[in-house]
Length: 465
Image (tube, rainbow, N blue to C red; front, side, top):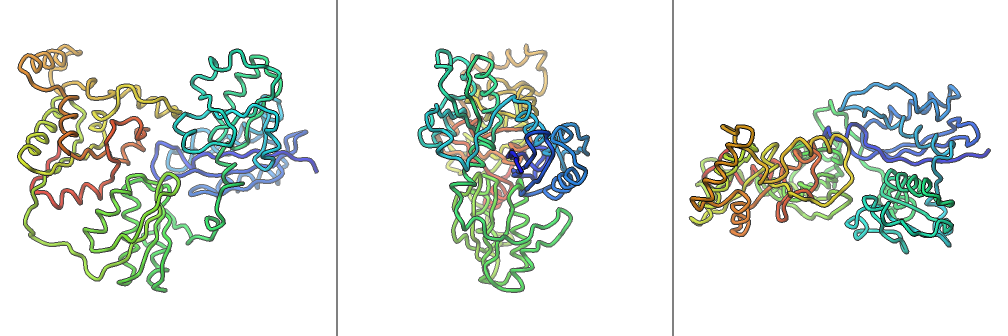
C-alpha cells in the first residue's frame, strides 16, 4: 500500500512554560487522499495523549486534513495553542497539496546527489554540526543570498526540525526554482537515523507522574543498592536538584545515581549541591542541551550549624530598575576592592541588565519575541524606579552621574567582571522569558537556585535587591 511520512519535533506543552522537552512524532498517511495510516511518538510529557488522538483518527478513518482542524484542549502546562497533532496535520497536508516536497534521512546520500545541499540554520549551529557537503545560508539572509542562483539546479534544504527549511523552500519555489525539497524532520530526524549510538536506546527507569511525591527511580535505588538512572530532562531549575535530592534520601551510602538533565545551569548547580550535602560528583559529561552526571552518596552531610561566616558577599538581583542595579554593582565593586569574593545571582527582571544590546539573531517563538520586545535590552535601557518621568528623570540622573565622574551601569558591570565578580544568570528565568545564552553578556554563567544557595551558605553577607 503506498504511503508517505512526516516527522515533527514539537514540545510536549507550551515552550514558555517550564517542565517540557522535545517530542518526536512520525505519522504515516495515504498520499492520494490523506487518510491517516499509522503514528509513532516518544518524548517526555503528553506522548500518550497524542497517540490516543492518532489512534482515534485511524479508527475513524480520518485524514490529515481533519487533523489540521481538530479543536483540542489547551492550557500551557499540558499543551500548545497549536497542538502537535495539528502540526502533524499541517505538514502532511502541505505535502499532499504540493506546497512543499520532502526528502528523507533514510535516502541519504542518494537524495542529495547532483543537488545543491543548503543548511539554513545559524552559523553557530552550522559550526557545531552539519551534513557533509552542505553550505550554510542562514534563513535571515536567504532571500538576498539566493539571488543569481541557477533555478534549474536541484536544491536540497534542511534545518533543525524542518520549519526554517520550509520557509526557505517557499522562498525558492515562489522565485521560480523547479526542483526543491526539504529534509523531513530536519537534522533532528537525521541524527536519530544515522548518528545515535545504540547505548542511547537502552531502556530507562519509568517516568514518574507530576503528582508523585517519591521518584520511581529512587525506590529502585533503595531496593537494589546499584547504580540508578534518573531522567530529569525537561525539568527547569530547581526541578532536577529537587528530584536528585529525593533520590539521594532513598539511597544508601555508597550508592550512585546517574542523572540526565536538559537544564544548562545544572553544570554549576551540581557541584554546589553535592559539596553542601556531603555527596561526591563522580563525573559529568555534556549530552544534548544538558548533561549526564553521576553522584555517589556520602556517609554524612557536612552541613555545619553556626559555622563562621566566609569572606564572601552574595546578592540576589531581582529588580530591573536602573537605580537598584547601580546600587548592586556599586556594592559589588566596593566589596571586591576590600578583598571579598562576590557573586550576583540575576533572576527575573534583574536579568535584563545582562542582556546584549545587539545579540546575534536566532529563531524565536512568538511569545519569546513578545517578551523580548517588552523588556529593556541591556543596562543602557533600564529606567529609574522613581521619577522616570517618561525618560526625562532617567536622562537627568545619567547626566548628573557623568558630571560627577560616577561610572555608568555598563561601566560598573565591566569593572565588576574585570575584578572577578561572578555574574550568574537564572536558567529558570531564561526559560520563562525566552532568553538564550547568546542574548547575555559574555562571561555570564548559567546557574540555578542551588548554585546561589551554595554561594550564600559561604557568605558573611547576603543581600536581595
